[in-house]
Amino acid sequence: MSSASTRLALRSTLAGVMMATLIPGTDAQTAARRTAFSPARLVDGQTPDFRGVWQVHDTAYLNLEGHPAGKGIAASKSIIVDPSDGKIPYKTEALRQRQENYRTRATADPSLRCYQAGVPRATYLATPLQILQSPGNFAIVYQENHAFRVFHPDTRPHFDSTDWWMGDTRYRWEGDTLVADVAAMTDQAWLDQAGNFHSTEVHIVERYRLIGPDALEYQARIEDPIAYSMPWTLRTVLYRVKQPGARIIEDECLDDANGVRHHISPSDPRNLLKSDYSRWTKPAQK
Image (cartoon, rainbow, N blue to C red):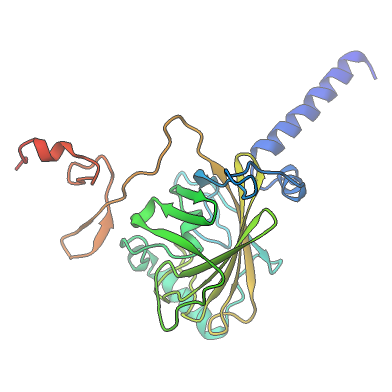
Protein backbone atom coordinates (compact mmCIF):
# COMPACT_ATOMS: atom_id res chain seq x y z
CA MET A 1 0.00 0.00 0.00
CA SER A 2 1.32 3.46 -0.88
CA SER A 3 2.00 6.04 1.78
CA ALA A 4 -0.93 8.13 0.49
CA SER A 5 -3.25 5.13 0.74
CA THR A 6 -1.96 4.38 4.22
CA ARG A 7 -2.68 7.95 5.37
CA LEU A 8 -6.20 7.76 3.89
CA ALA A 9 -6.91 4.46 5.63
CA LEU A 10 -5.62 5.88 8.92
CA ARG A 11 -7.83 8.95 8.60
CA SER A 12 -10.87 6.78 7.91
CA THR A 13 -10.11 4.62 10.93
CA LEU A 14 -9.68 7.66 13.20
CA ALA A 15 -12.89 9.20 11.90
CA GLY A 16 -14.76 6.00 12.64
CA VAL A 17 -13.39 5.89 16.17
CA MET A 18 -14.36 9.53 16.76
CA MET A 19 -17.89 9.00 15.50
CA ALA A 20 -18.27 5.89 17.64
CA THR A 21 -17.16 7.90 20.64
CA LEU A 22 -19.57 10.75 19.97
CA ILE A 23 -22.70 8.83 19.03
CA PRO A 24 -24.53 7.13 21.95
CA GLY A 25 -25.37 3.47 21.50
CA THR A 26 -22.47 2.53 19.21
CA ASP A 27 -20.21 -0.49 19.66
CA ALA A 28 -17.47 1.71 21.12
CA GLN A 29 -19.76 3.04 23.80
CA THR A 30 -21.08 -0.42 24.57
CA ALA A 31 -17.50 -1.58 25.08
CA ALA A 32 -16.86 1.41 27.32
CA ARG A 33 -19.74 0.36 29.55
CA ARG A 34 -18.11 -3.00 30.06
CA THR A 35 -14.73 -1.53 30.85
CA ALA A 36 -13.99 -1.01 34.52
CA PHE A 37 -13.91 2.68 35.41
CA SER A 38 -12.73 3.99 38.77
CA PRO A 39 -14.79 7.10 39.61
CA ALA A 40 -13.79 10.04 41.76
CA ARG A 41 -14.66 9.66 45.45
CA LEU A 42 -16.37 11.79 48.04
CA VAL A 43 -14.52 13.18 51.05
CA ASP A 44 -14.68 9.79 52.77
CA GLY A 45 -12.42 8.37 50.05
CA GLN A 46 -14.81 5.48 49.43
CA THR A 47 -18.19 6.60 48.06
CA PRO A 48 -18.32 7.17 44.26
CA ASP A 49 -18.97 10.83 43.45
CA PHE A 50 -22.08 11.15 41.24
CA ARG A 51 -22.67 14.83 41.98
CA GLY A 52 -23.57 17.11 39.10
CA VAL A 53 -26.20 18.01 36.52
CA TRP A 54 -27.00 15.17 34.09
CA GLN A 55 -29.17 14.70 31.02
CA VAL A 56 -29.84 12.04 28.39
CA HIS A 57 -29.02 12.75 24.73
CA ASP A 58 -31.65 10.48 23.18
CA THR A 59 -35.40 10.92 22.66
CA ALA A 60 -36.60 7.71 24.27
CA TYR A 61 -38.89 9.80 26.48
CA LEU A 62 -41.27 9.84 23.49
CA ASN A 63 -41.48 6.05 23.35
CA LEU A 64 -39.32 3.54 25.22
CA GLU A 65 -39.82 1.03 22.43
CA GLY A 66 -38.31 3.37 19.86
CA HIS A 67 -39.80 5.76 17.31
CA PRO A 68 -39.04 7.20 13.86
CA ALA A 69 -37.79 10.72 13.26
CA GLY A 70 -40.34 13.47 12.78
CA LYS A 71 -41.08 17.16 13.35
CA GLY A 72 -37.47 18.03 14.07
CA ILE A 73 -36.99 15.18 16.57
CA ALA A 74 -34.36 12.54 15.97
CA ALA A 75 -35.32 8.89 15.72
CA SER A 76 -34.66 6.70 18.73
CA LYS A 77 -34.06 3.00 19.08
CA SER A 78 -35.70 1.07 21.88
CA ILE A 79 -33.85 1.42 25.19
CA ILE A 80 -35.38 -1.85 26.37
CA VAL A 81 -32.53 -4.37 26.51
CA ASP A 82 -34.48 -7.32 27.90
CA PRO A 83 -36.45 -8.87 26.28
CA SER A 84 -34.29 -8.76 23.19
CA ASP A 85 -37.10 -7.61 20.87
CA GLY A 86 -37.13 -4.24 22.66
CA LYS A 87 -40.84 -4.50 23.50
CA ILE A 88 -42.60 -4.27 26.86
CA PRO A 89 -44.16 -7.71 27.60
CA TYR A 90 -47.71 -6.55 28.34
CA LYS A 91 -50.50 -8.85 29.37
CA THR A 92 -53.48 -8.76 26.99
CA GLU A 93 -55.72 -6.42 28.99
CA ALA A 94 -52.84 -4.10 29.85
CA LEU A 95 -51.86 -3.88 26.17
CA ARG A 96 -55.39 -2.70 25.35
CA GLN A 97 -55.01 0.00 28.00
CA ARG A 98 -51.68 1.04 26.55
CA GLN A 99 -53.26 1.34 23.10
CA GLU A 100 -56.00 3.56 24.52
CA ASN A 101 -53.40 5.69 26.30
CA TYR A 102 -51.58 6.12 22.99
CA ARG A 103 -54.77 7.17 21.23
CA THR A 104 -55.45 9.91 23.81
CA ARG A 105 -51.82 10.79 24.55
CA ALA A 106 -52.06 14.44 23.41
CA THR A 107 -54.33 15.27 26.35
CA ALA A 108 -54.08 12.28 28.69
CA ASP A 109 -50.34 12.22 29.43
CA PRO A 110 -50.10 13.11 33.15
CA SER A 111 -46.63 14.62 32.75
CA LEU A 112 -47.87 17.09 30.15
CA ARG A 113 -50.56 18.10 32.64
CA CYS A 114 -47.91 18.88 35.26
CA TYR A 115 -48.06 15.75 37.35
CA GLN A 116 -44.66 14.42 38.40
CA ALA A 117 -43.09 12.08 35.88
CA GLY A 118 -42.53 9.12 38.18
CA VAL A 119 -39.84 6.44 38.15
CA PRO A 120 -38.09 5.60 35.87
CA ARG A 121 -39.49 8.21 33.46
CA ALA A 122 -38.04 11.22 35.31
CA THR A 123 -34.53 9.95 34.53
CA TYR A 124 -34.78 10.04 30.73
CA LEU A 125 -36.91 13.14 30.19
CA ALA A 126 -35.73 15.87 27.82
CA THR A 127 -34.91 18.02 30.87
CA PRO A 128 -31.91 17.62 33.21
CA LEU A 129 -31.63 16.36 36.76
CA GLN A 130 -29.17 17.09 39.53
CA ILE A 131 -27.62 14.57 41.91
CA LEU A 132 -26.89 15.81 45.43
CA GLN A 133 -24.68 13.64 47.57
CA SER A 134 -22.53 13.32 50.67
CA PRO A 135 -21.27 10.19 52.46
CA GLY A 136 -24.38 8.31 53.58
CA ASN A 137 -26.79 10.64 51.76
CA PHE A 138 -28.15 10.60 48.21
CA ALA A 139 -30.88 12.64 46.51
CA ILE A 140 -31.96 13.60 43.01
CA VAL A 141 -33.72 16.84 42.09
CA TYR A 142 -35.46 16.85 38.71
CA GLN A 143 -36.10 19.98 36.69
CA GLU A 144 -39.55 18.81 35.63
CA ASN A 145 -42.43 19.61 37.99
CA HIS A 146 -40.23 20.33 41.05
CA ALA A 147 -39.88 16.57 41.56
CA PHE A 148 -37.24 15.14 43.87
CA ARG A 149 -36.29 11.86 45.50
CA VAL A 150 -34.48 11.17 48.75
CA PHE A 151 -32.83 7.74 48.70
CA HIS A 152 -33.08 6.01 52.09
CA PRO A 153 -30.77 3.23 53.38
CA ASP A 154 -32.19 -0.18 52.53
CA THR A 155 -32.39 -1.20 56.19
CA ARG A 156 -35.75 0.58 56.36
CA PRO A 157 -38.80 -1.28 55.01
CA HIS A 158 -40.91 0.24 52.25
CA PHE A 159 -44.04 2.12 53.26
CA ASP A 160 -47.25 0.13 52.88
CA SER A 161 -50.51 1.19 51.18
CA THR A 162 -49.08 4.28 49.51
CA ASP A 163 -49.18 5.37 45.89
CA TRP A 164 -46.70 8.19 45.36
CA TRP A 165 -45.77 9.69 42.01
CA MET A 166 -42.04 9.31 42.70
CA GLY A 167 -42.36 6.13 44.75
CA ASP A 168 -40.51 5.11 47.90
CA THR A 169 -36.79 4.44 47.38
CA ARG A 170 -34.29 2.36 49.37
CA TYR A 171 -30.68 2.04 48.25
CA ARG A 172 -27.41 0.23 48.79
CA TRP A 173 -23.96 0.16 47.17
CA GLU A 174 -22.67 -2.82 45.22
CA GLY A 175 -19.06 -1.82 44.67
CA ASP A 176 -19.21 1.39 42.64
CA THR A 177 -22.83 0.81 41.56
CA LEU A 178 -25.72 2.42 43.42
CA VAL A 179 -28.67 0.00 43.52
CA ALA A 180 -32.07 1.50 44.33
CA ASP A 181 -35.22 -0.46 45.17
CA VAL A 182 -38.42 1.46 44.35
CA ALA A 183 -42.01 0.61 45.32
CA ALA A 184 -45.23 2.36 46.40
CA MET A 185 -45.85 3.93 42.97
CA THR A 186 -49.12 5.36 41.74
CA ASP A 187 -50.68 3.71 38.68
CA GLN A 188 -51.44 7.16 37.22
CA ALA A 189 -47.83 7.73 36.09
CA TRP A 190 -46.80 6.88 32.53
CA LEU A 191 -43.43 5.61 31.39
CA ASP A 192 -43.24 7.84 28.29
CA GLN A 193 -45.35 10.03 26.02
CA ALA A 194 -46.59 6.96 24.11
CA GLY A 195 -48.76 5.82 27.03
CA ASN A 196 -46.69 2.93 28.34
CA PHE A 197 -47.66 2.41 31.96
CA HIS A 198 -47.63 0.19 35.07
CA SER A 199 -49.98 -0.69 37.94
CA THR A 200 -49.61 0.02 41.67
CA GLU A 201 -47.98 -3.40 41.99
CA VAL A 202 -44.89 -2.29 40.08
CA HIS A 203 -41.48 -2.94 41.61
CA ILE A 204 -38.39 -1.28 40.14
CA VAL A 205 -34.71 -1.96 40.76
CA GLU A 206 -32.47 0.84 39.45
CA ARG A 207 -28.72 0.67 38.93
CA TYR A 208 -26.56 3.78 38.55
CA ARG A 209 -22.86 3.58 37.69
CA LEU A 210 -20.28 5.87 36.16
CA ILE A 211 -18.80 4.46 32.94
CA GLY A 212 -16.60 7.52 32.44
CA PRO A 213 -15.99 10.86 34.16
CA ASP A 214 -18.95 12.43 32.33
CA ALA A 215 -21.19 9.44 31.56
CA LEU A 216 -23.61 7.82 34.00
CA GLU A 217 -25.23 4.54 32.98
CA TYR A 218 -28.79 4.02 34.19
CA GLN A 219 -30.58 0.70 34.22
CA ALA A 220 -34.02 -0.18 35.55
CA ARG A 221 -35.50 -3.66 35.92
CA ILE A 222 -39.29 -3.43 36.09
CA GLU A 223 -41.68 -6.12 37.25
CA ASP A 224 -45.44 -5.84 37.62
CA PRO A 225 -47.57 -8.99 37.85
CA ILE A 226 -50.70 -7.03 36.95
CA ALA A 227 -49.48 -5.35 33.76
CA TYR A 228 -46.60 -7.50 32.46
CA SER A 229 -46.15 -11.17 31.67
CA MET A 230 -42.50 -11.05 32.76
CA PRO A 231 -39.97 -8.55 34.17
CA TRP A 232 -38.19 -6.31 31.66
CA THR A 233 -35.16 -4.03 31.67
CA LEU A 234 -34.30 -0.66 30.14
CA ARG A 235 -30.89 0.98 29.90
CA THR A 236 -29.71 4.44 28.88
CA VAL A 237 -26.83 6.84 29.54
CA LEU A 238 -26.93 10.30 31.08
CA TYR A 239 -24.19 12.79 30.25
CA ARG A 240 -22.78 15.47 32.51
CA VAL A 241 -23.95 18.98 31.61
CA LYS A 242 -20.64 20.82 31.48
CA GLN A 243 -21.54 24.35 30.41
CA PRO A 244 -20.22 26.95 32.87
CA GLY A 245 -22.79 27.68 35.56
CA ALA A 246 -25.03 24.79 34.49
CA ARG A 247 -27.98 24.30 36.80
CA ILE A 248 -31.55 23.12 36.74
CA ILE A 249 -34.23 25.80 36.57
CA GLU A 250 -37.71 26.17 38.03
CA ASP A 251 -40.42 24.50 35.98
CA GLU A 252 -43.76 26.25 36.43
CA CYS A 253 -47.31 25.46 35.37
CA LEU A 254 -50.49 27.47 34.86
CA ASP A 255 -54.17 26.59 34.61
CA ASP A 256 -55.61 27.05 31.14
CA ALA A 257 -59.15 28.19 30.34
CA ASN A 258 -60.42 24.66 31.03
CA GLY A 259 -58.71 24.43 34.40
CA VAL A 260 -56.05 22.01 33.12
CA ARG A 261 -52.51 22.68 34.24
CA HIS A 262 -49.75 22.82 31.64
CA HIS A 263 -46.08 23.76 31.47
CA ILE A 264 -45.04 27.29 30.55
CA SER A 265 -41.71 28.64 29.43
CA PRO A 266 -39.37 30.14 32.06
CA SER A 267 -39.27 33.27 29.87
CA ASP A 268 -43.06 33.63 29.94
CA PRO A 269 -43.89 36.86 31.87
CA ARG A 270 -46.62 34.98 33.72
CA ASN A 271 -44.02 32.62 35.14
CA LEU A 272 -43.04 34.20 38.46
CA LEU A 273 -40.09 32.03 39.41
CA LYS A 274 -39.51 31.61 43.10
CA SER A 275 -35.97 32.87 42.58
CA ASP A 276 -37.16 36.06 40.86
CA TYR A 277 -36.92 38.37 43.86
CA SER A 278 -37.20 41.42 41.60
CA ARG A 279 -40.98 41.15 41.67
CA TRP A 280 -40.90 41.90 45.41
CA THR A 281 -39.31 45.28 44.83
CA LYS A 282 -40.99 46.34 41.60
CA PRO A 283 -44.66 47.40 41.29
CA ALA A 284 -46.84 44.60 39.97
CA GLN A 285 -47.70 45.02 36.31
CA LYS A 286 -51.38 44.91 35.51
